[in-house]
Structure formats: structure tokens, C-alpha cells
Image 1: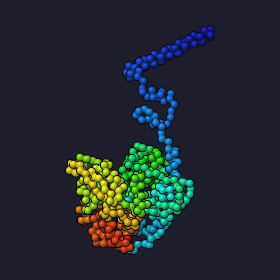
Image 2: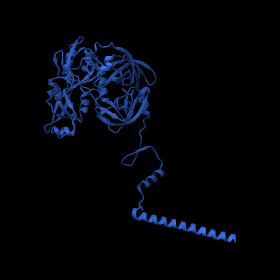
Image 3: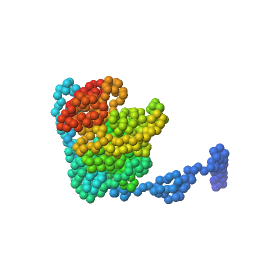
Image 4: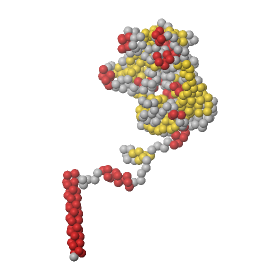
Length: 504
């Protein structure tokens, strides 16, 4: 009896199971049918094909271009190995002189009147470090000016760990470059490339000594060219940086930026950062400028820069519209120095320079870079836009003093003598301050002006009672006053007038 009952129960269980399975099966068919009707799922998604292809095909590290042809990622091992041998580690020592006046009052000229005589200056030794690139086999090295400018002692460590004392051969604050020398022979050295041939998007390597980590190599691409990030203070400074995303940090300054063939395309100089550490972009001085500075220092002992004698500014679409210009690219002439190269060539305020020597000028930084590679006496062809017409002229470049002659050895630039950069005063400043002439101190570095108490923004109107209209005016007076002092007078942007005695 029990067996019969169990058989009946088992048969009922099987039936229920079969019914549930049938319901589930029919439900699946109905779902598929609805999906086909409403969602057209009979078309297989493309990513399925890709997935199948990836899973069935051997993989490799490649970049894919529009043609679909895989190209292997560049192998930088040989380039890196060769480049690290041309990059050196630089350690410097210098004395920093400070007082409570300097630390807390920023060199204000009226401190003595309100607070009494300045406290005696205190001295402390400061250590610094950076990088450099060997450019000649007999020990000449190029680096950033800011790495060595105040150094009392310079030690250079090669990649093979040999250590040498170094001396400064020459400096150029307007490009932030310097050449130093160690006593060595048969050194590996970097080969300069033409930085104008550098393309946005090409691979580059940055080699240096960040955070005292010697022989560090990072890779990236060229992100942009002709960048002006205003870190050298404007005025006669040349800023036309190569921007890359290769990681650069403190200590990389003065190191090499090389292309995929191992040739030098730039000297690493700065990073864009809110923290002081790398945040995505770094900037290098183009190799063409570095090569020019190196050749000037080694051949003449001084920087031989050609000047057009103009003040230029950026041109955007809004300003172009205000000025009635149809072109948005170029270097807009704000002011012309009387008797300067541009003035003699027939250029005028309001002209837009569009090309130099048949090379397009897209921005003021591009013009500064191109003219900055020339020397006094060099002739350049200029294309410009005026009143709806394109015109051409030729200009013979002058030196910083407005002369067609080389600077004599020992005749330092006004920027180096005074430790500052200068720029033209605006029309707004002239009207607001009620002055007729002057030159603005764009940026004060360590040097004579800072020690005298001059601050950024000061407008120099007279030197020894002589009217000042340009940096060249200051230079002429200073060069005739060697070993003496000069009286500098002027006004700050807030209207406060000031007088400074500066020994030269």
C-alpha cells in the first residue's frame, strides 16, 4: 500500500516539474520574440565583433592610426642610454643675505622713516641643485641661469659619478640660460636639433635630476610650441617655450629635452604647477635659442642680440575687431622706439607683423624667438599688415643701445647689471599717473635694484635727472657710470614717488 502511494506522489512531482519547465521554456520563447519584434536584436552589436576579434588575435602594445595598420610604440632605450651620459647633476652653494626689513617689509623705501634704520643683514648658506647638458667635449655645459646665477661654488657630477668644480663662463637672464665649464676632455656631448622643425604630437624625452634623483628619464609628447608663461618678467626677455607632458620636477631645470633620435630640442626650465611638483605640463627653452646663446658666449664672451626696437602684444579676435583688423594672428606693434630698427624700416604703431624671413609669425613669442636668434647688423625681411593691405620691408637689427655693433666683452646687459627686466608703460599708466615718460620694472631678481629696495611695478622716469623712455636709455647712462652711483627716480602704480641711489 505504501509503495503505491509513493509511486503516485512521485508521478505528481514529475508532472509539476514538467509543467514548470514547459512554462519557463514558453516564457523564454515569448521573451525572445518580443525582443526581436520591438528591439530588432537580430543585429549583433559591433562591440561583440571587436571582442571576438581581440580574444582570437594575439595582442601587442601598439598604436593604431586611421589606416588600421599597427605601429609599434617607439623604443627609447638606446636614446635614453646615450642621453643620460650627456646630462650632469649640478649642486650650488650661495650666500643669502636677509634682514627683518627684507623679510617683512619687502624693501619698502619708507621703512627707515617709520621704523628707524634697517637691522643688520644676516648671512646664511643655501644649497641648490639642478641639471645641465654637456655641449662640448672639453667640458662646456649649458644650464638655466636660475640654477647658477647666485652661486659661489658649483659642483658638477657626471653620469659616471666623477665630480668636478665648475666656473660660470657666461649668463643670459633674458633667456634664462647660462654656460659653465669643467676641466675635462673627451666627454660625450649633446647634438643640437633645429627646434623649428619640432612638431606638436611628436615623442620626446626629458632627462635630468629631479629631487636629486640622478639620471632620471621621462617620456611624453610635445603639447604646444611658442608658449609665453611670463616667468622671465617680460620686457626684453624671450619666452617661446616648447610645452610637453613629459614629467619634470624640481632639479630638472637645465636638463635635456631630446627627440626620438636623441638630438637636443630644448633645455627644461619650468613647470606649470600650483604645488611646486609636476601637474601635467613642463616647458623647455628651444634648442635654437640655446645654441645661439652658447655660440655668443663662447665666441664673443657676451650675448649679441639683435633688436627691432618695438613693443608688441598679443592679438585676439575681440581686439582685432576693435582695431578693425581682419587677421587674428601675428604680433601687434604697440610702440615704436624712435630711431630703432623698426622705425628706420618704416614700421608704425598699429602695424601687425605677420612674417619674418618668410616664416609665419602667429604670436609675439614667435617673433621674439625668431628675432632673438639674430645679431646686431643682421638684416631681416618683414611682412606686415596695415590698413587692410599686406606690405613688406627690411630692417637692420641694432644692439641693446640702439647701435649696429656688437656688445664689447664685459659690457653687460642692463638686465644683468641691475638684476631686473623692463617693459614699456601703458597709455593708462601715463594718463593715470600724470607722467610723460618712463620704463616699468617688470620683474626684480637678486641684484642692485632689489638691494636698493626697488619693487616690481616701479616706473623709472629719470636716471641722474635724464629722461628715460626705454631700457636703452638706462643702459647708455649706466655704461658711462662704471664704478660710480646713479640716482634713480620714479613712481609706483599707486602714485607714490620714490628715489633710489644705486651703485653701478
